[in-house]
Image (cartoon, one colour):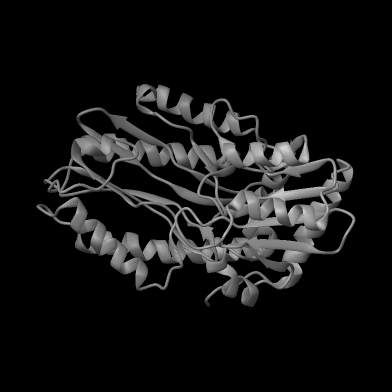
Length: 362
């Protein structure tokens, strides 16, 4: 069954929780700019990659929530958004000018919080007009990290569609095929599933190139005995999937044994995934297992990450992470081995964290 957009009641409950968090900080105003955060509290995601600028302004002591969008997005936002008053930013003014004009009109409360601004010039313009800016990104990230049933259903649907791409890769993969041609077959299968879009650029890498964790597909032809890494993610209602599989064209004992080791690491670590587990402990467990096999120096990245409206979000599962898993977290575990100039393997699945363990979603 296709997943529809987030129900109004869910969006309203998120706004309520956010206002409660604002009250604890004595935050009278909150300006939200990150596209994923905007979608989280309004249900609206602007088009484009990255999405065009849209803003949410919440006043802690008022009922109104405002969504400010460019003129190009106004019709769609006005039709879709049920929880906020949609305001059209003027085409004749810069984003900073339009935003500041609106804030002056509704009244700029102090202190005002933001969710993190990536545009330095805009941040400075806001600071000059509004004084001190305080940051509230960690609170919103914490809310987003705990998924409700609707969010889990979207992620499961995204995974289901992603697996069709994986299946297509298995069906057509053959010796002599170009990486880019395999990519085209996978993307065709995904779009036939009526996805909202890709969550990231699909990775297809074979042979020595598979030792590059983030390799871009090339015109290289896939040779017999080579490993082929395929990393795929799509969006459903804005929510992402992230699945990685490694295939071997023909046979290669070393690659196959290394892949079996990588899958065993995932299967072992997942036994410790539950609410209360330290993310860094999970990463350390994976590294010890690789060390036992003499492969630890080839595990080049963190064990995994949270998944939701962003491909990478809280909790982060890595050596330096201070995150502790909570029920409702959706995470990936993606152990991998990358031997420069020879081959790489990676295996990534998605899990829903619970009190006494976890559920595999992929």
